[in-house]
Image (cartoon, rainbow, N blue to C red; front, side, top):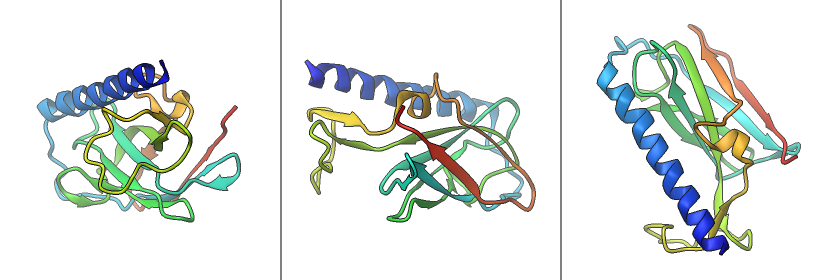
Length: 154
């Protein structure tokens, strides 16, 4: 039963992200080469969250497609624009944080091409990982400043 729920949730998350970035793509991807470095740190319950994906999804009239980064062992990340390289265009973003693991909490096996057939779960609560429910928002400004994402499991 867990497998079915998680697989459906993963499929819905993937579809929502694809729709979000697909619709944004229709609005254009011009950034005029004006990318601002976006770096930061993610913690979950006060501990660095290693191996998590951090996605910045554009909101409103923000140009570009958004971007993604993966946290290192210390929870640090650097966002890369989906088409233009490191950094993001200045503007408003929804932020999604996700770390998919096996149902027992162990890492996804190395070499796994698709998690669709695996029994998995997200270590990060839905309020941070779901594109329709995330409470995380970020304004990227010229000059930039490190982003601190302090997540809680409760």
